[in-house]
Image (cartoon, rainbow, N blue to C red):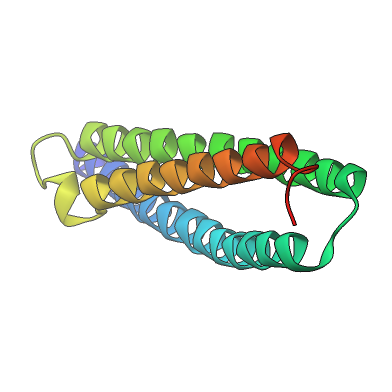
Length: 140
């Protein structure tokens, strides 16, 4: 009887860890997507405003430098989300053993692709900001 209670207790703890892993995954991606949406909107708006309204080359360079660095940090965050998604999948696989496929609980492939796509978006933004920096003097 005592062994049965310990077994049930272990299953209960395992179930709680699985639920916490899934919830952590959801919250992390929710926060990241909110950040990315706001950051991307602000980044694209700033690019247009710099092209249109900032005429001083030195000001353009400072703004381009600041945004390029922000994109580098956001790129690192995207890579971290890719790793996080994979780590959560591995953790769930270890917790579930062969009972359930973790792909049924969290979308590892989709989340890793989303993170990589966001990283590529940051690379494009960095290239645009570097272009603004390099050609700040010759831009109209």
